Image (cartoon, rainbow, N blue to C red):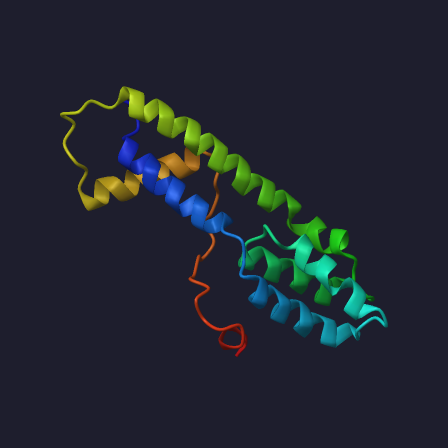
Length: 155
């Protein structure tokens, strides 16, 4: 039985939210907090933008994972590539899942009949879970709106 297009659309929305880039202001606050632990390099004013650039397409939860890894594992403040290394696999996995879901959406759209009854909530949840699992997504991160000010999230 084909997967309902509605379930695939919902799964795409979830994955897209998990891929939404972090607010640069929030990233700057997170980087500065970690930098305070290591001490700022003498040329920080010249290189700070490179760190924001490294995280420009990274979701906030992965930015936080990368910085936590640096705080727990590294003796010196890392270069941007070193910060991205521990999250590269998860980021690529999410991107790959998004691509697979878009293919599934196209197939579901072609297979769905116009007279199919709408799904009830439990069926919808089960269908979305099945689509996410088929796309290789083991877990969905807790996706929160970044509408809060950069300082509110750091309490």
